[in-house]
Image 1 (spheres, helix red, strand yellow):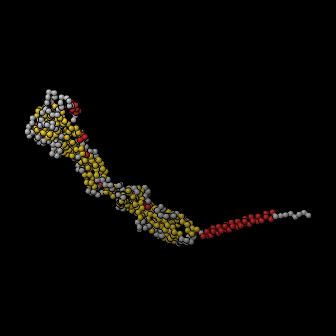
Image 2: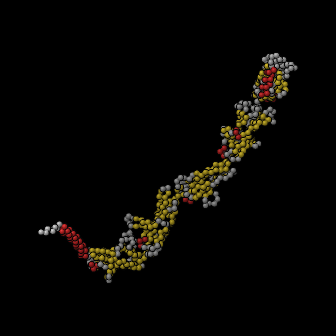
Image 3: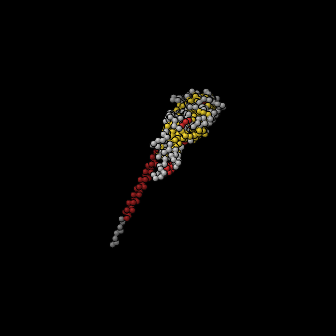
Length: 575
């Protein structure tokens, strides 16, 4: 009850005192706003104390008569109950502003009139609809919007009485705080309202395929609420990610699938490009290598494009590892080089990682030993000697996923030709030989010669001795080939029971059609008596030293004794 009604009742109560002109008519119960569903019965209360006049009702300012089966009220109730009963309520007939009146009973009284109250005959509104501008979106239809662009949607519930209450939900989460509802008279049907709720929303790509729902709440609905749901179709440019690169190294022969995933709406077209290739490499969401080849190595990039926009490019490096492969060795299979000239051995190999090189020379026969000459692809020999003659091979190696891979080339034979050469670096050849007298002296000289030597002999002083000959105590053996050393020989001169006169310089002379080489060995014969004399002299020196030491000791003791006697001398007393 509002303040004005309270004041009215207070005044009428104050006047209703005994001893005045009589008891005045006053309201005990005032009518109140009521709501009713169509076809139902409703009672609008109105009770008057000290009623003397007749009860009457007005609707929208017009007196309503008692109509059987429709409007029922007592004009002169003894208990003052002037309430009206309305049967089979209808929107057109009964919805409006109602007033309860009691006519004046004397000239001293005024007609008693209540404030107007609202009787609302509910009218179920039409089910809600969602409109984008003026375009209606049907139940379950998609609603299309661009991501990150502000959008306004309207939810409308028409021809309801009273207005429906509208609420918005996104995937069952209420978002009504983002809306503003207005209620206006519906022009198409009297006494009804149109409820309009405006949703201002900026959707993101995360809202794609979510369900947007508007719910109209009204007591005239059978279920108290009706709704409309649309599916959001949020359009956004592609965002891509790359998949498929293995954690371990990519080895030639394995299978590999690179996948470019594009998160986009509408669906995006995938474009692949490869470094070093002009134009487009492929236009599907994945590229497959089965098996992958070394030629597939490179930088691949993918991008995606749809009607909304284009993604950034993403790159992935495909580095295909493969074992070494020797493509070429030079010269092959044989090369001839002149002594003291220069040459080179070249090895060309491929692999990923890039192979490491080794040039190996075979040394020895059984077991075979391979000596590394260089760890470069090219082996430069600036001063060729016979020690470089022999069999070579190139070895290429790399490591993939912790596994060592190696490959050897075909063998190359390096043939050295030229004048003879004494082997002083590769073998222990001495130029000075010491032999005791009466022992055998063996002088050995190693040399190489290609072509073969046409003559080999020994010289000392004015004497010359060909190999494979002997005279007296001297024997010059025939030259012997050195095993596993092509074109190399051993020359040996033996002098039996050497004497002091054999201490000379002996020279080996080797000749072939390319030239001549000599090598001299100084022989020193040690005489036995010289050694004895040296030992005897040493013994004599030791004995002399011992005697001298003993003599010094004796002299020292003797001198000490003399001093001792002199200190004890006492002169005889004079008589």
